[in-house]
Image 1 (cartoon, rainbow, N blue to C red):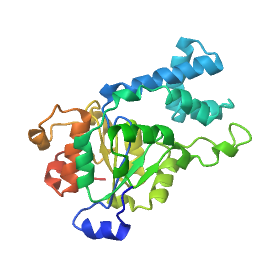
Image 2 (spheres, rainbow, N blue to C red):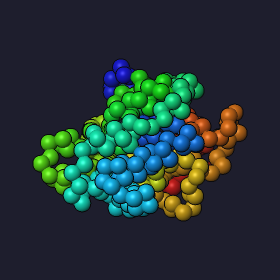
Image 3 (cartoon, rainbow, N blue to C red):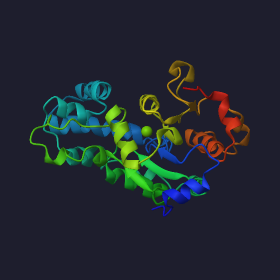
Image 4 (cartoon, rainbow, N blue to C red):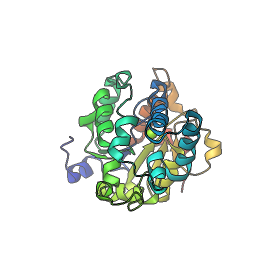
Length: 272
Ligand SMILES: [Mg+2]
C-alpha cells in the first residue's frame, strides 16, 4: 500500500486542486471490451436460475429491473425478502468470472505511480473481486485504500432477516457519504472517476469533482451531472499514441488534471 502520509501528500500536491483521486474499478481501470461486465451479467442470471429457480428470460429481465430499482440484484432480492447470503452471491457472480482476460497494465501502473495524490478504490464489488482484478492488472499496491461492498455493508453478516440492513451501494447518497467518511477527504479537493453516469451524478451531488470515464456515453444527454468527461475530442487526443480505448482516455485526462494542465481539461468542464 502507498506509504505516503496525508501531510506529505498535501505538501507535494499543494499546487494541485486535488488531494485525493477516488477511482471506480470495473470498466474504469480496465476496458469494457474485456467482457467482464457482460460475464458478470451472465453470472447474475445464472445465480437467479440456479439458486432461485427463475427461467432464463425471467432472470435476465429481473436483473435489469433490480439494477434500476435497487442498484443490484442482491440489494433488490434482499429488499424483497429473499434471504440471499452476500458471500454466496458473490462467489457465483464474481467467482466464475474469466479473470485470465485481465492482463497486467504496465502503462497504467506507471501513470498511477507518477500521481502523488492519495489514490483510493471505490467499488460496489466485494473485496475478493477487487483484489483479484487489481492483482491481475498489477496495480494493487498503487492504492492506499479499497472501499468496497464490505465497507458499505458491515452489518450484513449479522442480519436476522433479509431486509434488516438494506444493501448499500453506489449510487446511493449513503454510499457516497460512507466513501467520503472512510477516506476522510474534502469532497471539493477530491476527484472521482467512474464509468457510470449514475455514480458520477451521485458523486457530484455530494460535492466531489467528477470525471465520467467512457467514450460510450453521449455527454449532451448527461447535462451537467459531471464536471468533465472523457467522451469528446479533447486536445489531449493529439497526445494519444495508443488506440483510444476508454482506459487510455482516462489516462490522458487524469494526467492532464493531475499535472495541472487544466486548460486541456477545460474544454468539457461544466461548472457546478
Ligand atoms: Mg464501473
